[in-house]
Each structure stands twice: as structure tokens, then as C-alpha cells.
Length: 484
Image 1 (cartoon, helix red, strand yellow):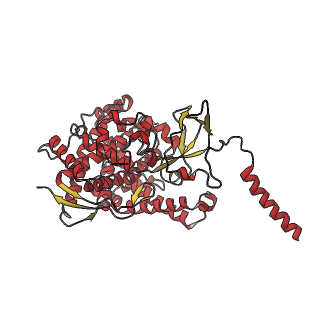
Image 2 (cartoon, rainbow, N blue to C red; image 1 turned 90 degrees about the vertical axis):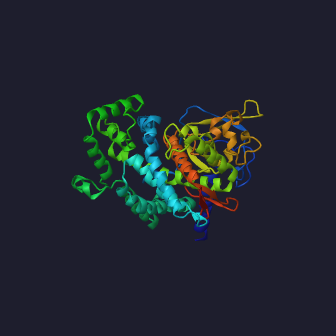
Image 3 (tube, rainbow, N blue to C red; image 1 turned 90 degrees about the horizontal axis):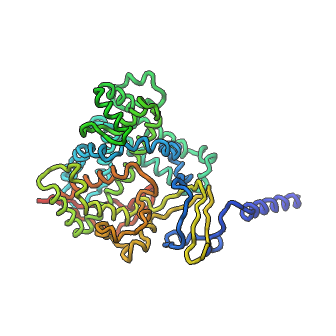
């Protein structure tokens, strides 16, 4: 019996030793400076200027396995995104985005009205105000929803999304739950499935006026999509021909008339048959989810920063008054003129990186040339997962000696900015169809708010936590005082 026990112990020890020390011909050699056991983890938040990447292809990154916790259930996958990105570019063409300005004005004015109800009452937690505003705005521009269709999005969607995010974070922090065969048997997985089903059904639901469409539907009824298809069939043919030309030529020619993003997706589905209803649902889920989490977080932080920097706020206010004059609403011609406001938003995104880090899986080898060592190279092998620390990237020495300071003026002089554009990646590295949409939403909302209120806040004692995006540990409190 003792011999059997010793044999088993020896086998386990040998297996562990072999797992950690076996030859790995495809693994990169250890980068200089690693410490025993912890390796380079102490370097995670330091600056590095040792190497320059030379990827052999411009598309060498896939989302890491952590992001698949959400992708499998809710978001669109990387291969699908690569196929559809160019097809959907017309939906985010500047001419299309310009048609959203009126909707953005209406929603921003509604937000101002809500803040007026609490003006002069001291510090206010702005989170719920802004989350509802962002959801209303994105649902009107992407789905074409009207106010009476919004109630489920405002209530159930927010609750379901926040609980889903909490589950994803809890799983991500517990290594034991990373393997799917373990996670799939937990109550957490069952609850996540329930929440994802609720989220899908909320986005795919409409009013009782289209209930007759459910008779031939599957488990996810795609009611919003079906209702919108029905609406599009009633539009005149010329409008649809213009829409067809716009999708083919990358332009939008419909006399500036507003059309939600869903319309273009439905056109690609019905006329060109290049995108399915389920693809549409995934794109809409991704767009709404991304807007809810990122845009709302950036807007909250921007108000906090403006309230904490009165001099910056006053300069923004003067620019808004100069551009708008006595006009109540912004136009597509006004937004590009708000140069300093855009600089403030960009600086907020740099200093308070909405995504402090992103993980990516390499699908091809990436070679680094090591500075100060002639002909020295270091290769990250395909299949490796690398973490890009955007927090450190945005404080890289190439930003200058004031890299850690909040200084919007740096964006007004391009010559003072880093020469490498990849040093600034607030939404992650790579192409994002909705970057300009997000900037338009932020500029419109901040312009309306600052024009009507003097903001007061204190960012100095605020601590931050990382969920899916960077968020404060405490409520963001801002005081609103009506301007005369």
C-alpha cells in the first residue's frame, strides 16, 4: 500500500513538473527582467519603450477568451464583425450621422429638463439620469423607437445588463470558473442565461400593435425587426432606391431625412441578402450594450471633470455661446466648431481611460525589435494572449512631461501630440464604426448641459474600480446651478 501511495504522489509531482517545464517550441522565450514565480507582473503598470511591434498583418488580434464570456451570449463575434463591418460602414457615414442631430438635440434637452428639477438642491448622483438619456438616444437613433416604446428599455434592460456585467466580472475574477465545463453547471451560468434571454427579448419586443407577428415567430420573436420591416414597406420606392444607392456608394442621399441604423441593416437583409435577422439582432445588441456602458460612463466622468475644473468649464461655456448664439439647438454645422469641447472630451478619455486595459489573442506572429540591441528580436507567437495596458499607454512619455496632467489644450496643437496615433486608444485598438457617433452624442449633451448650468464637483477624493469599463467606487455627485 505505501508503494502505491508513493507511486501516485510521484506521478502527480512528475505530471506537474512536466506541465510547467516541458519544451514548448512555439512559446516565446522569457523577456529579460522576469522575477521568479511572478514573472513580469510588476511591469503591468510601468512604461515600456523597449520595442516596436512589426505585425505581419493589420488584422492580428482577436478578442481574448475573457470577452467570449459575453460574446457567446450577447455580442457579435469577431469573424462576423470582420465580414459585416464594411457592409455597415454606410450606416455610420457622416451624412447619416448628421441626420441624427435633431434626435440628439431632443434627447439632450429632455436631460436638461430633468436636471432643472434638481438644480439648486446640492450634489446629485447623475448616474441614473445619464443612463436613461443614453439609452433613449441610442434606441431612437439605432432602432427608431419612440418614447412610448421605451419603458422596458429604461427599466428591465438596465437591471438585466448590470446584473449580467456583475456575473461576467465575478467569473473573470474566479479562475476556477473560467473552464466552460465547470461554469456551465453552476447557478451563476443558469442566471446569466435567464438574463441574456431577457435582454434579447426586450430588444426584440415592440408594442401590442404588432403581436400578430408573433404567431409565426420562433422563441426570439424579433418584433422590433419585423415591425420595422413592415414600416419600410410603406415608404415610397424612390426613398428606398436612394437608400440602396447610399449603401453601395458609401453615401447617404435622402434629403437629410432621419432613418435609424436598423433600416440600413434591414435593407441589407431584404434586398442584398447579405445579413440575417439574427445578425441584425446581434449588431443591435452590441451597439446598444456598448453605448449604454461606455458612452454613459464617459459622460458622467466628463461632467465630474468639468465641475472640478471651473476654468475649463468656463472656456467650454464661452465657446458654446460663441458658436450657438441665441439658437436653442445645435446643427450639424455647429458640432465641428466646438473644438475646445472636443479637446476636453478627448482628454477625459485619455486620463480616465474607459477601458484601462484590453486583452487580445494573436492570430499571427508579432515581432518586436528591441532597441539598443542590434538585430535583437522578440516574437509573440500566434495563439498567445497579450494584455494592452491603455492606462499606461495614455501616460506614455511620448505625451510629454505633463502626460499625467489633465490638459485639454494639448489637443489644440497637433504638433505637440505623439507621432504614433496608436498611443491614443480610448476605445481599444482597431477600427470602431461608432466612434464618431459617440463623440457627437457626448458633444451634444455636454453643450446643452453646460449652456444651461454651472457645474460644481470634486474629483480629488474619488476612487475607481474596473468592471467592463472604468467606473467610480462612489456615486458621481454634481451640483447644478441654473445660469442666468
